[in-house]
Length: 322
Image (cartoon, rainbow, N blue to C red; front, top):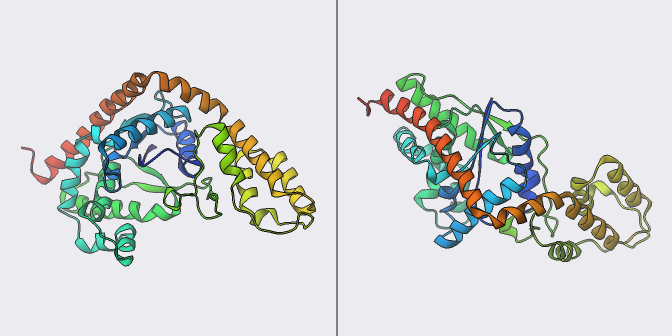
């Protein structure tokens, strides 16, 4: 099994990023024959326009991923733009990509439906994503249910290329992240930077506590029993604790006679305890940014070797290598 996934450096990682994706990356690196994880800075260009900010976000993303458990001995961690073979491969795929296919893709359709301007980068985003996957012969791509379309597009493009030129590309399969959590934000909606409702994985402890205490709750009386499964505070708390502590909190909800402030304090305590080791490791990594850059450099060299082989295969098949 060759696993591949990428994550955009559009800001510091929050609880939703971790439980929705990063936790699964850490698990899969120990199960795969090879795992490739990249920081998708080329994709981020469609939203981040400040050059210095993008550089900082990229380094922050790498530091965060290492602190959270990505192991360079088990996985290849690199920056997308450090593998130029991918953009060359993207052009080969582009020459065989129907316009109608891209017009049906969610990100482009949604933006157009809202009357927002959409550039060529957003329109062709799925082709670059396909190149990201195909460049490493990845057969397994962990995604959430809302991202399955991207894998279907990748398979369509690879299948068309193979039909025309022979068996060049491995057709990947989406691995739905069954344990990926839908993490509610501070307003009860899905946690997302675009909703401004996030809690950062590596926020300072005092900031975490302050943000947690501001989480919106309903106005039901303290004495009234409550359904834990329908409450976003309980859902957040459940992410950080074992089954025993989860059941104890659920029993408290069903019994009633408690205030939400009590749950918020327990949530903040549990979250800070959960990320404590990663938080301290990140502090150490911050002191040695060159170490992080070396990991990325080594990862890029390994990624380029694999991507170069795939690119050469594709170039030879379509006639631009002779």
